[in-house]
Length: 489
Image (cartoon, rainbow, N blue to C red; front, side):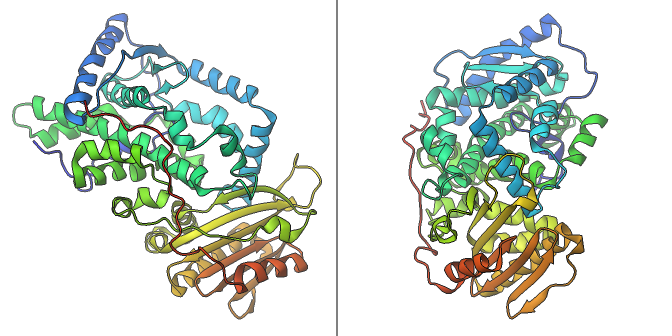
C-alpha cells in the first residue's frame, strides 16, 4: 500500500516532526521513568527488524551489527560541557565571529549567547544520537514507550549509512583544512563548505526522517486496529511516538531565536524530509537514497527546490572581487559566509512576515556576508566593533527592491534610535549608535553596508555595484566529494 502524501498530512504530523534538534527529534516528557532491563532488551531486539525494513523497503543493507547503548540526559549535558571545554582556540574564535555576524544582522539578539545555548540548553532537546567516531548509537533511557522504536529507526539510519560512506566526510565536503579556511579567508571560501555542508546535513537527516515516517506507515498498514484505517493508525502511532513537549522545554524553545530554531529544524523536516520525499516521488526510495550521496547538493536552494536538483540546474553563485585587498590591512576579515536562500527566507520571515518570505526566497540568485573589524585583536569584540558587508543578487529588479525593503525594516528593529532614513535615489542611509548603515539596490543587486567610514563605503559601492562582475548568473561550484553511494543490495 502506498504511503500517504506528507504534504496533505503536515498539520497532523506536526507532533512527529516539529523542532528536531541537532541529533534527534522532540524532547521526551519530563519525569518519564527509566526503561526496565526487559524493556531495553526488547528495544535491542527490535534492531534486527528495523534493519530488515531498511533492506526490503529502502534498498539499504546493513554491512555490520550496530551497537546500542542507553544514556541519560545528565550524561549528554556532561558530554556537551566536556566538548566545549576541549574546543581549540581557533574553533572558539570562529564560533564567536559567526555569532557576531548573526547579531550584527539582527538574526540573534545582542544579549543572546549561542555558545551557552549550544552547551547548556540545546542538549536538553536530545533524545538520541549516533557517534560516527565510536560507531555506536545512544538512546535516552527515559524515552516514552511510543517514542522508542521511531527514535531507534532514525538513529539506525545514520549508523547504516555510515557503514556505506563516512557521514562526517560527506557533510564536510572536503578536507578539514579546507573546511576551517572556508569562512575565515576570501581565498579559501567556497559555498560548498557552508551552504553546501548545510544542504548535505539535510540529506542525512532527511533520509533518517523519511525512514522513520515510512516505518511508521509500514506498521500502520500491518497493524491497523478494528474499525480504524491505516491512515488513522499512522496518526495514532505518530502522536504516541512524539508526545507534547514538557513545559520546561517549551519555554526553552520559546526563548530560542527564530533563526536558530528554524535552522536546527530545517535539515529534518521542512528541508531534509521534504527533499527526500520529493526525490522519492520522482524515482522511488532507491533514487532518494543513492542520488544525493553520489551527487551531493551544494546549496540549501536545492534542498528547498528538489525539482531544480533533479534537473541539475546550476546553483547561482557570485564571483566577487577580494574585499580585503580593496579595503586595506586596517580592515581585518573576521568571517565570510554564503548568504543562501534559506537565510533570505528566515530573514524575510523575521522582519517582514511569512508571506513575504515565501514569495521572495525563490527569487534569490546568490549572496554573501562579510564581517570586518578595524580593532587589532578579535577577542572581546561586540557589534559596535565590527563592519558588515551583505551583497545579494536577485532574479529581477523588483525582487531586489523588495529585499532592500525587507532589510530596511531590519535596520529599524536593530537600531531603534536610528530614526528615518535619508534617501539618495535607490540608497537609504541611517545614522546609528554603531555608525552609518546603508541599504541600496542597483538593478538586480542589493548592497548593505554597516559601520564603515565614508571612504571605505564608497570603495565598496564602486566595486560591488557599479563595476560589472563575471559569473553572477548561472555559474556553479557543483562537485562530488568521492563518497560512494549506498548500494542497493
